Length: 178
Image (cartoon, rainbow, N blue to C red; front, side, top):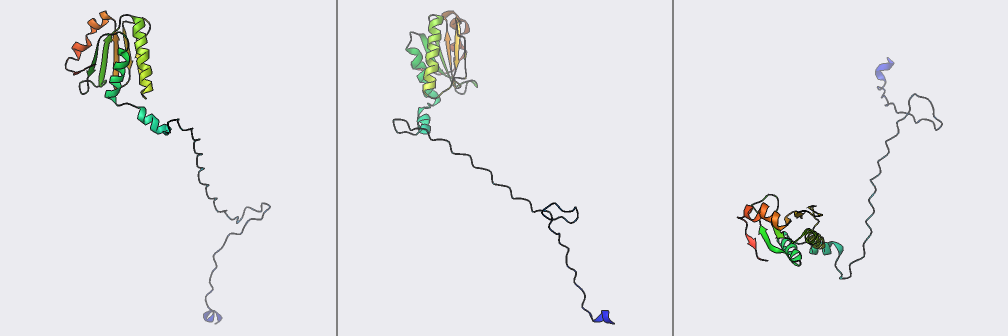
């Protein structure tokens, strides 16, 4: 018995044959290994801007330019007071209002003066790194408002200031000396 004395045959695993270069047949094509994905390209570094004349880096200069909210309120008040205002008031409404931390309230003699003061306040705020969120009441209005986020400026005609009486509404707010 020949089968008893022979060693058992080992079976080789079937391997896929590579397809011929010209295309070949559909049978027994080897699957090509997936190509590794290329790493995403790094973005080019932004071009360096020229350093300011004072030697500070642009980011440092911007950070130094931005004022804290109480300082902005005082800058706004000082800018407005360069014009002849009647009874200017700076109210600290921090904790009393969810709308703002400071209100600057003043009376202008006419709508042209009111517009000039509002323009100056917007310019000064931007010089100090604050962008106005909104402005209302331009062009002959009785009430002009400049919204700087934490500081809101109210400029009134004499009649409108008496009618709306914001100081009476915020009587609990401490007044800052100007």
